[in-house]
Image (cartoon, helix red, strand yellow):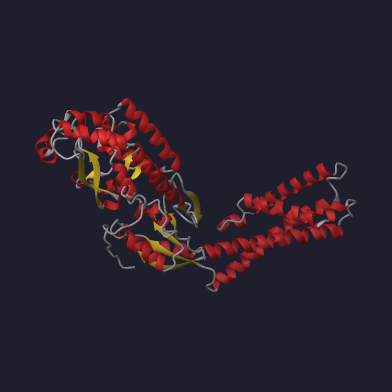
Length: 475
């Protein structure tokens, strides 16, 4: 695939949002595999029970002849097989020791039910014992038949998953040979690691979507320096399998599997990604509308105090870097003198942030008396509820930074721009302005992004109230 550059300025959704939404590719093949296995198991268990009743010692209980008892048997056995993961792809369905254990456990559960229903029944009744032996034999046999049939079809080029390989040129030949050994994939294209760069990533995803790619194999060397690539693929409905020659490599949320002698990691992908984000957006809208209505009197009081305190506008508007680096105007109550931005150049030498990316000055001479009070209780941030209403910000997320700060970013820092910025965030409730190293703040932002959930947002909002009331780290 030829590398194609796309404009980062074009609108793209938050990493957490669904894209369309898109259903995970290859779902039909997976669905048919599971349905076929279940039907085979139903046939095997039903056949085992009928043979057991036919050739075993006749049972003296009429309830065992009812269709409802056979339905109970099927429900318990299929449920146990599913709970043991025996309908998953790959080696899981061929895990015969686990299969025998699941059938035996379900048999034990059924015997327990029978004993509770009829205490006089014999556990060692020949019909039950024969049913157990035949269930084990038939279910193992149907898996063997299924695998043989699957291999024959795949040798003919059928029911193969279309995949794409992303690896550096020197590793391509080895990785292609490794993938083809599995006999269930068709490699439809190969690209080098440059297709994962920020400027090329959207074009890569669109290319894969148009080619109906089910899974992508990525070498560890191609992905290790590109954080959140897996998240991008996940929201596009594509499974990422990370190939590695280093058995010690492990991602905390990954599932380790083997391909030949090489381990690979898989980060689970939901069938439809991003539904929680829609709830988050709905929550932001409702909260911002209610807050704006309730706080309207406070807005009027603050506006009057600012006007009486110093000349200049009530609101301060500034270009900030939002989602994917797009510019937007952030709204705040003015807390500094009118020409504060021009005066900042003369104060750069006094910057208290160690790496110089952000600008923070504890006793900033540009802050007005009313402005100092507003900052102490974070009241200057209240107009950002309008930004939330417009969809430019969220209630919780990494803080949007001035363009002056973003221009000093290193590549790894742009990760925080992949989600909607917020009025408050994990950084703000973990020290606010007391954190004097930008890298420490970015680590907190990354921690939030990696562990994001609606519950985490609620906890941060509640903690924000406590931090504001305690005036922790505010200046």
